[in-house]
Image (cartoon, rainbow, N blue to C red; front, top):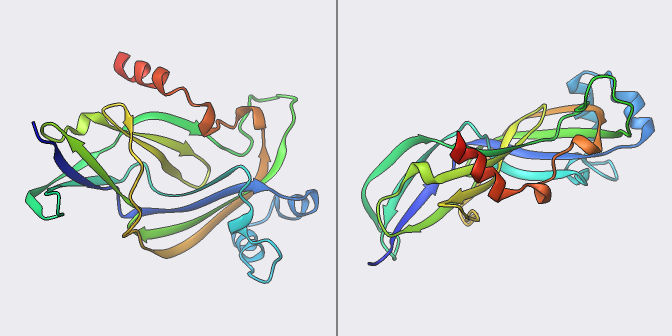
Length: 208
């Protein structure tokens, strides 16, 4: 049986998120500041290091996890076949927490001072190219999510338990605004992408 090809539009709304460590001096200056003050300071392009490069903990450009998505079947040459399918809701496979002050109340553990900065955007955040032996099945498309104070964004896609890397050839976005916050983070409670157990996540999903 020949494979059928489907193109998934991942969503129109999302943005670019960075989380990174800042100096004790900047933390003391901005920990209680309004978002506008934080944005003005860290988005100044005359700074030696802008928000875009303060990203040693997280950096991704992605759609919001609550976006609807649409699917279009097409030929090998890219000609559309039939009507567009959707909208569909994403199935959530796992969530990674990357919050400031994310730790049990009263915990006496190491913290790091971080800046979370989010550029809210509208446009295209990549497409998924999926090949199947039959119809596209929305129940087989799952996402991983990174959860922060500023946004919940998709950080991975799986179809039929196989990871799909987005195609960014036609990705293009327009900025809609900035959001930012400064706070302490417990490294122990920052869920890193490399530590996610995908097989276990699928087992939990199937049990639900």
